[in-house]
Structure formats: C-alpha cells, structure tokens
Length: 461
Image (cartoon, rainbow, N blue to C red; front, side):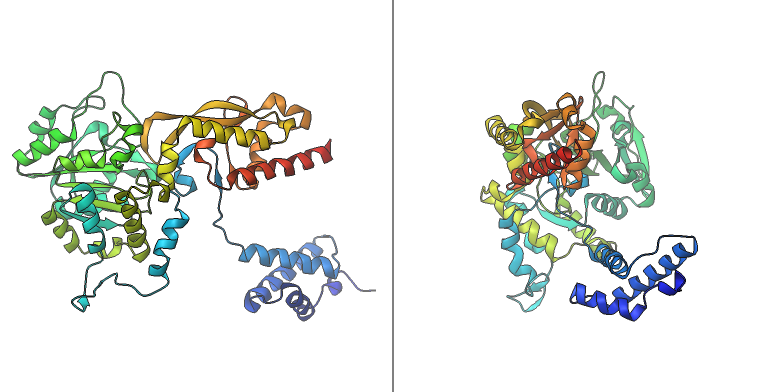
C-alpha cells in the first residue's frame, strides 16, 4: 500500500494536465508554481494534512496561476461622493480624451522634435500656447507631480537661502509630505513667520534680510483655520516681493479654472485670478480640480522657468509623452468649452435636479426588500481642495434597521459591495451611495450587485 508521500502526483503529469486546462500558459511560471505547490503539499502531508486527488491538485495550481497572472489594478465604482478621490485614482479620463490621444501613443510623435526645423525640439512647447491663451502665462513647465514642482523650485532658487512662509501654512498632506522637510531636503532655509492662527504682512516684511530669496505661500490643502485667524492674501505677497526684488511663489496644491466659479467662487481664487496678479511662480496638480493626468504644473515668469529647466534635477522629474498628450487634450477641451470631455468638471457641476433624478433611478432599481431611500447628502471635491466646503447632493441610503430581515447590517452590505468593486460610505447606521460621483454604466452594476447579495442572503435564511 502506498504511503501518502508516494501518492503525490508527478510533476510532468501535472504539467501535462495543466497545459490542457490553461491552453497557452507561461511555461516557466507554471512550472515554478507547480513545484511550489508540490513542496507545500509535501510539507502539509508530513504534518498529517489532507490527501488530495489528482483533480484537486490541478485545480489548486490553476488557482495559484490565475492569482499570479491576475492584474492588481482594477476599475472601481466611486459612490462615496468625493469627486477627486486620491485613493481611487483622482480624476477620471473620458473616452473622448483617450481616443484623441490614442494616435500619439500608438505612433511615433514630435514630443521633442521640431518638424519645421528638422532638429531636436523641447517637450514643454506643446503646452506653452495653451497656458498663454488660458492664463496669459509667460511660460510653463510640467513635472511628474506638484510635490516635485515644490522641490524643484526650492532647490533651484533657495539652496542655502531663506524662504519665508507663514507658520499656519507649514502643512503636511498625504504620505507625510511636509513643507519643512521638503525645504530641508532641497537645502533651502525655512524662515517661519506669524503664529498658527494669525500672520500679518508686517511679519513677512520684518523677516526679510539679505539672505531672503522667496516669499512662499502654501495652500492649506486638507484643513482650515477658522475663528480668530488671519492670513496674508497672495496679492499682498506678490506686491511685497516685487518691492523687495524677491520671488513670490504660491504652492496652490489644487487649482481650478473659472468655469468652476459657480461652485467655488468665494472660497478660493481661480487660476485666472491668480494669474492676473502677474506672479513669479505658481504650481498646482494636474489630476485634481483641473481634471487631467498626474502632473505638477508650474507657470510664471519666463526667466524663472528657464532657470528651472537648467536644473539637472529636471531630468529625473520630467514627464513623458502620455502626460503631455493628456494635458494638451484636457487644456484644449477647456479652451473649446467642452466640459463633457472632462468627467471631473461634469461631476463638480452637476445640479441638484440631475443628482436627484440619478438617485431616484438607482433607488428604483435596487430590490424593494432593501428599502432604498433617496436622501439629501453632502459631497466633497476632494484631492485636498476646499476642505471646509461641501457640495449639496443626493444619494441612496439603506439603513441598518431595514437589513435585519435579511440577516445583514450596513457593514456587511458595504463589504459585499466593496468585493464587487463598488466603494460606498457608512454614515449614521446607514450605507450611502452618493449620486454625484456615479459614471455612465455604474447604476446597472450596482443594481446587479444587490440582486446577487439578495440571492445569497435568501439562501442563508
């Protein structure tokens, strides 16, 4: 009689069966996973583990292979109401934008080639005309994100020199990105002025000395100081910098065009307003309120941009053809007033009637036993923009008390939806699906997921 170890299938026999099941697998990976499985199986048997038949062994190796070859990055449905959701990839691209740039990505292109002169060109030239038209900016430079933009500016102009910033703007954003640490790493000298809640223009004036080079304003991306507080407006910093022959720099974090004034005016200035101040340098993110790809966009004085381009660090921070093509297409959409090509704009500009109708349609599709209710709710722009400003919205709520008959609660419902690729939020003993961030085709997938859950729940009752 064979011992358990003697009943372990032979490697060749397993590989033959696996090749038939998987059609055209990667042979090297398949063999590696098969040997790994056999080694683990052998160890389990020595510990008194369960003896598997041949088919079960094949099935387990197939599962290992599928897991190893499965793509980790997956599309999700954002039902949180946070438009620029950092954890969910920030801004979404439209099919229109992707189709527009597809020829540039599937062919060679003139990224750094001057077709008229027949010689090497500059990759940033493709965005200059657009920024000059949209913002009347002298010049523009694009790096891989806004953190890189901050570092490059400080390293270029403030190495060994002082940068004056309000104590209330020494921010930390996601990933422990801290202004003081960035200054230290760029070899700039931090000179903080004012207090946490109040900073006056006089504080900047009094701190200026022969080693000062930049007057720096940082956007408070993810918090707000209210009550007994004061901050210096950027226009005052621009005027003081000009008076003292210094560089004024605004790390805007997230910037928006005036088309969003109906949503944000009175809370933060638009890019057009900031540009009209004739600033030295401004930087902001491309994948936040702009609605484009990840990038750190720097605009301002041409002489300063030219110096940034001479910094050797730029080679490490520069962007590729996809970023430039996607930004160019996004900015062209702004220029032509084509907001439909920018999903982030569409979501931010959705009116209450549209949101209510969308929530009603979703609620009607969900099985009646879940007792889905349309409720007014609050959405947020996200991405570190407008931290204290919410957007009125409508959503679908499913309350804990209405799930008891199905042996469910709001947490189990959230887990089921999450496993189906639907990200909702829990609030006040209810699961809420905010209509503002739902895209075309999302409703059908959400409704289907509820029917799947209902079938599972009824089987358990």
